[in-house]
Amino acid sequence: MIDAQKYTFYIIPIDIDELLEQISFALEKRMELISRERFSQIWTYTDKLNTKGNASETFLKKRNNNKNKFIKSAKQLLQVQEEVIVDENQIELKTLNNSNVIQYQDFEYIIETEDAFLLTYQGYVTILQKKDLHENEVQDFCDFISSKVKLISLGK
Image (tube, rainbow, N blue to C red; front, top):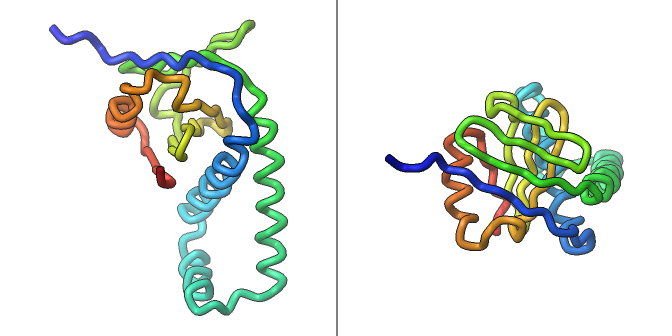
């Protein structure tokens, strides 16, 4: 009998400078994905404008302001430390004072950046660094988790 798959992320201090840009971009992409699901017709029109290069200066300024908001949110997220256990049925988030179990059906996405995973669920985001997982388990983890939750890779 094969043992159930289990992945434990042993959290080490996060290097904010190393991950800030990746996490900010991933948060922005998460919001775009949610928006595209809710407002698909508007996005069809927006995509046409973007491909023609017809975006107004006001629109571009607003987009830059939104990027600054994502950077601020990313800085806040990068200061949270946890131990995370991923198994066949759920993901358990452990802090010094608390343990929280999240079922796979409660996840929106898991977004993969070059150095991290963003777990998005019930309006929350948890960041896991790839280096907190044994190096040879990263690809196995991606294969496993993509069978449970929609995994979106932003490039490696």
